[in-house]
Length: 201
Length: 171
Image 1 (spheres, rainbow over the protein chains, first blue to last red):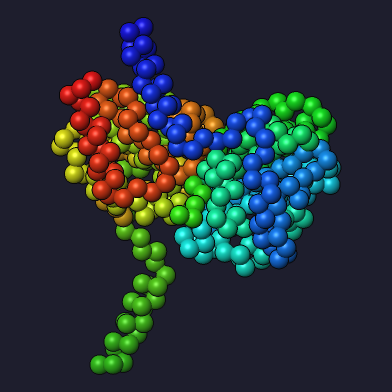
Image 2 (cartoon, rainbow over the protein chains, first blue to last red):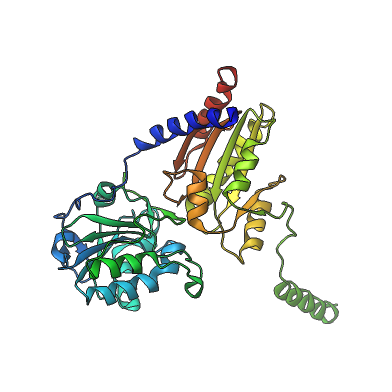
């Protein structure tokens, strides 16, 4: 028991120190930075508000270079394309500084979107400001808003990046189904290992 | 003379070309671990501070930071710093992870993350998003002093380790 009480305080302290690190958007929050225009792979300037769907809106922070983003890419594209057709607005946002990884440059995004068949915008967060406003930290990281623009899901695509065949819990798909059907999201927050976003300084 | 040496040179050249030549790994094979196993390593008595670095061979900033992590690990080892390296490489990447550790002359036991991401990430810290690299510094009692995501420079790492070591006198 003494061991345990010794342990609690530091945990609280640690949480307090970490919280200032620019908190992540809490479940229930309104969509931030909705009106920031970002250049999409079709050359058009696009904001998150522009893609808002009648049933909800999915914002995925991703990029070209990150091995985890690549592993989940096909699943992100499949989900994005499928649920866009079901009334969910979908947008993929690359907030990485391409001077850190050249593969994250605009031209490379254009080719990737073409190659993978993105049916939704893939945009450049040119100041990384949108990612910061969301409190996004890694790629890939999904934020799903309901039709009222409230955050209802934040986190991983599913629980197995390495192998789509071994997924136990399709978190994002379940959340999308719930939102598209006007139901409560079963699991609102999840995590996965991923690449840190290479914020522009 | 040339007639003799040419075929020999040819044989040698082709051997060199076709034999895989990575040097044998010198680093111990990383041990599969979940967050509880890493936690146990943090709580093991005998250290004045603990530095945990979660890295992966596919993570560019992790690779760039690695020499500085090791620099600090070696510099403060005698002062009581225990360094716990946890590779987040995928299953099937154990050889690459060990190769990388060997290239950096790691001669102590390290871990490789196994099990569900979510369990591991939350097990390390509730607020950690799972982004790499992630570094956690604990004092000698296993209390977290600081954690952060992203590459840190040698002076920053040094300062943070010193900060944790200094806690020894003020528990």
